[in-house]
Image (cartoon, rainbow, N blue to C red; front, side, top):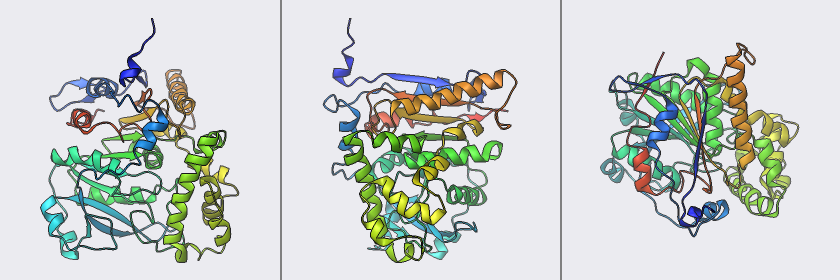
Length: 410
């Protein structure tokens, strides 16, 4: 008998994880695992049946939508990394009353103001409030609806939250000839280290979307056992940027809709920060403005900026799929089988790496001295861009604290 539940928007959920996950201790003292928490906490996926494939789901997110009114105050950080100098912006969620009382600044996104020096000096605290660090997708920022939809139920439940904006994104100024980089985890690392100093007792969590998920996964893998995050969530991670790029060029829709749209969005960032970016003598303005697609933009901007010979080399260096082998904290990956950017077989490759790493660990061997720890991948069938479009009332079921309550066991 045929399964026609998809007609009603009923998506199927599949889980995969390390066969021997690290036990986690809940607030009540009982033992559990991340895989069990995910399966118990994540509700069934019920979508609009008229948006019956990944393309429609993705395009639906482009519709005008005010989203929840999240208010931010911005702090500009001076980078402490010699290879990636300059400044970057972090937006902290503040109460509605404080946000409405702040002076309006036309140079910043809506509902965003700068911290005064006095306000920033008072930010330190010894409280134990859970805090979320969020990373947005390609050319996005703290203003994005999908990101605010994620933050709204958590902050309403008493969480603190902030968004690390990519260089040049969310109307932040670029102070060096470098935009954000799909491989650069330095701004995230510096932010998390500073938050640990400001809030020594707060449990820190992180979530990344799309390119932000790729950066977050690389960060968690690079930190390994030193990672101070209690848990991390990677939503719609492209995992293997080189394969994504090749696959997008194989179809007319992939090339002319997705690769072109992403390329045009990056060109808008270039126009905003043209003066700074052109200080890099390797960047040719005519070639950049002549770029039609994402890979052409990366070829003419990212490659000369960072010294990559080709955009393929840039993508291969930036991919996060191998970083899974270094993860040492509870890590939840959420992907859709019909995601038009991160195709299902790319997710399958990521799952294969988890399985391969698990087999190697069980056999007493390791890859480059690294052994895989608990990773739980969630794949929604017929979904598109997963949590970006899950209705708010269903997100609240996931974000009531049950998914991220446990502390990492020994």
